[in-house]
Structure formats: C-alpha cells, structure tokens
Length: 101
Length: 432
Image 1 (cartoon, rainbow over the protein chains, first blue to last red):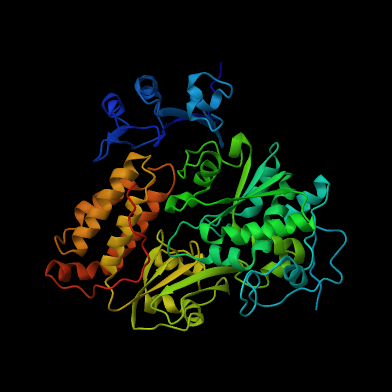
Image 2: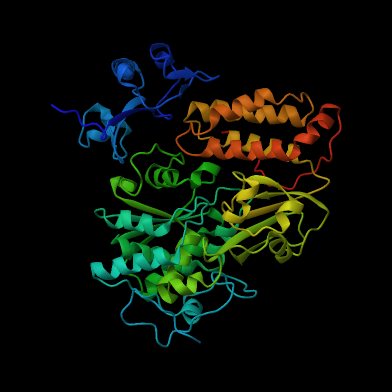
C-alpha cells in the first residue's frame, strides 16, 4: 500500500487539569514529553507525540490513576478526541467526565 | 428619520423610528427605577420575531454577523458564530449571563437594573433564533428582584413565546465563566468545566447551550430591530457598535457609561467627571486586564485594536484610575491575593500557582525582596494550565504590573512606598 503522505495524522497528548491530582506517574514514565511543575503537576512540553513514543504515551495514559490523560487525534484540520468519557455517551464508568453525568 | 436597511426581514422597517446617538442600551438621562415594559416598547418599538422559517432565522444570524457583534463579557467572541453552532444542535437552551463576578465591574448590574426588558428581549430573541424553548437569566443578587419583576410583567402581557426562568448568580469571581454558569444552574456549583465538549454542543443538561453576556443580548435585541448598518454606525470598522464601560477609582463620578468603541480613553475618563487626583496609571479591562501608563493611554482609542500596542484589550469594559498616592504594587498584591482565593480549586496549577504568584507579589510590594525571578518562574508555570483562563488572566495582570511598576521595586526594598491607600474593590475573604 502507498502510505497516505501529506495527510499525516498527529496524536496530541492532553491533560484534564481538573481530573489531574498531580500524582506524578506520567512525568516519571514519559520524561521525554512531560515535566512536573513546581507543585508536581504535569507540564506537557510538546503535545504532538512522535511516532516512536506513541507506545510509551499509551502506557502512561493507562497508568494515570486519575484517568486525566488522553490522546487527541488530529488529521488535517479536524480533531477527534479519544477521551473515553466523550466516546461513550451511554457509557461505562468512563462517563464520569461527561457533562451528562 | 431614515429607515434601517434590515436585510433579514422581507417586510422592511417602514415606520420604525430609528434612534440615533448614544446611549442605546441605557435610558437617556436620569430615571429613578428600571424602565417598565410600556416605556421600553415606546422607546424601541416591538421586538420583531425571527419568524417560523429556517430561512428567516438564518437571515437574522447573517444580520448579526454583518453587524459584527462580539461577546461583551470580555472574550469578544463573534456572536453570530456561536448562534450558528447552537442553532444546528437539537433542542438547545439559552443562558443570559449576568453573573458579573468581577468586583470592579458594574455594567451588567446597571444594565439589568435600568433596562431589564432589553436584556429579556435579547434572550427571548436568541432563544427563537436557535429554536430553544427556554431562556435562563442568571442575574446578580443585587438586581434579581428587578429582573423577576420584568419577567412577571412580560408573562402578564403574554408577549413571549419562550419560557423565561430567572436565577440568582453565584457571587464568585470564576462564577461568571460560561461553563461555570452552566454548572451553577445545573448543580449549584460555580466552578468551570473542562472543554471539550464545548457548551454550544453539550451544555445545560447535555443540551447545546448558548451562553451570552447580558449586554451582548441587549445589543442583539437592537440589531434585530434596526439592522446591522445601524449597529455599525458607531464604533470602529473592526470593532463596531457601542459598549458599556465601568469607570472607577480616582475619578470625580465613578459610573457606568455607554461609549462608542474607539472613543479616546481621555474622553472616557471625562465622562466620569475627569480625574479627581493626579493619576499614575490605569487598569484597563478588569482584574484579568493590564496596568497601563496614563499619559500613553489617554490618547489611545478604547478598543482592543487601539490598546494592542500597550498589550492591553478592552476586556469587560473597565477603566480604573490609580492616583499617584496609591501604590500600584500594593494594589496588584491585593488583587492577586483575591484572585488566588477565588480559584475554584479544581486545577493544581491554578490552586497552588496563583497562591505562589500572590505570595511573590506580596513579597515584592512589602519590600521583602526585589528579586523578580521566583515570581517570573511561577508566572511562566500557570499560563494555559487551568480548565478556564483564570490563571492566565491573573498572570496577565501581574506581568503588566511588573512591567509598569518594576522601577519602584528597588524603592520598596529600601522601605519606601508611594502610598498606602487603595482604590480597587476587593471583597473581604469569607471563610466557610
């Protein structure tokens, strides 16, 4: 298959500042992208996740005890949020961040 | 009197008296109480309905776009764009935001207290434009009764097809942020929520929600009556129309005035009777705004484009005059502490960061240090790190204070300060 160059998708690492409690796991697991601030909350230095760090980023997202991290998928101008709460309208426990709940 | 070219209605506006000049929103001259429904209709004429058809509603949104109306709550977002997004959703709700949590600002309270029917007109019209069945008016507690009376008057007259519900606003600085208003109505918690989802897609009860500042809605009610060209006949090309401004501090008559956007700042101060003492600086835009040099600012137009050179913007339309005998650093320290206390406490960088920022400004103002680097470090760590822009706004104010009053830091470190009085209103801390 020919790769779809020019229509490159980007995964952006996002943090929900309300959900985040500053536990600090993410900064330890993904120091390439995340630094803790003076109070222990994550600063995402470069939100576009390079391809070679995608696996680590996903592991970090799974490890967050507050489910405060997620990847936003951007292709061209459009954005698709892969936040569990938003995907599942009638959803499972992940719906806690949705506005309906 | 010419008739407005009101493209959104096929019927035209023959016979409608088009008011010229200012004020547009507030009653001209002194009135003892709020303008009643009869007086309101005499002055402005009946509120036109956007009509039942999709085409008419779209034409009215297009008219608002041509008018160039932007949100008057401080963010200046194009109103037509918000209307279009909400109109595309299913079963939306309209919220008129009269929270005005900013302690220095009074323009929304004054508008609701004097022209409540114009705001209700705008809320009803916006609801009809997006096909909402309900408009929620969130009014500051000081004007709640006036809005209740106005809503009851309309119910008796039977003039609205939309249900109006009035609730008292949360008395808290962040309570006016759009998502905080929605959460306040829904659950009684005046704290912002995370975006996405945007309120226009999913807000009150999960419904698409149009949250507009009350002044924006008042302008909307007039654009529907007199058209975009009338609206644009005052103001600047980029920022058309008029706006309400709160003028306070060292002026002879602190007041709320309606000005054409782009009126020179010196002239705006004149509307409040001019300075009551020699001035050293102006706070422009509000507690999320900027300190600017009086001499540099006086000739500039009060518009975001005009103030861009000073790094400032009109914000929610506030000008506070700082006299020469009140210390700008101390004032900033008081406001910074207030803003830190007013954090909703949800986001770590805001809760801890603004406390550290306030601490840093207090140390500088108190002459305990003249080293800026710890404060700068904190400021750089709070920008863009909250769910809302509360930390960004506070950081903006403090940065502008450091830029303008920076030369005084050395004097403070040597125990000298230009004054101990205060002009900016900061509510007392309340401990539960």
